[in-house]
Amino acid sequence: MSVDAFVLIHGGFHGAWCWDRLIPHLQKPALAVDLPGRGKHPADMEEVTVEACVRSVIADMDAAGLERVVLVGHSLGGATTPVVAAQIPERVAHLVLVSCILAPDGGAVIDAFPEETRELMRRRLGESAEAASEMDEATHRELLGGDMSEQDIRWVLEHVGPDSKHLFTDRASRAGLPDSMPRTYVRLRRDNAVPWSLQEDMIALLPGLQIEELDSGHNVMVTQPEELARLLNPIAEKD
Image (cartoon, rainbow, N blue to C red):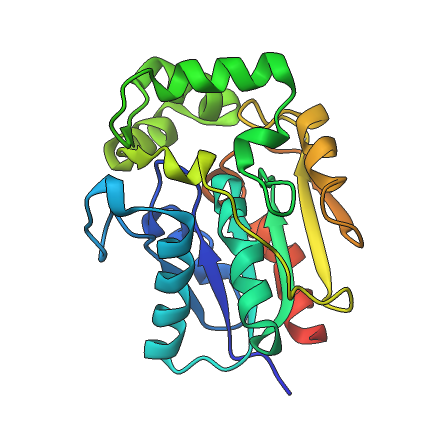
């Protein structure tokens, strides 16, 4: 059964807009989803949970009539993407994780960080009991801007917004994800947001990953869309 499309799941503080430069280089149609709380799916951040994100992605696939897809997640999209694949494995031809942060199965994303990094992440999320979290410009520049031109980083800064702490702290299960499902992790050598060593830790959480590498910072779909497409297009043709 051939692949209908790519389904692109953005990371934290981002939205479907972040894939705009990649989509023209893909050889299959692409559905870039907005997770709840942004873009086409406004919601109170208290309601933006991993479960709500999974439901939203599947609903968007249903609305688009997609039966078989290559599911691509980026960064904090790793909280949602493998859970979607586990819930509808018959519709996922290949799972692709682009410098994703993952949760231990049955755990939360924040549980997978080394202790010192976990405390830094808690500080970045803030001490408030509110679900909404927002990073300032300096932090976005530190995490995303390593290989970005000033024009690129300003474009990103014009679009980023708040996100939900639930995506870091909710527990979710990947039960149902078949060992036979093809899966690829794209490592980014110059990523400041998910550093090389942390990417290695994430890879260890999901057995069976094929590893690809790009010499890129965190937002590879913005800075090197053609190179990312060169990795993704053969996956869609093969599966």
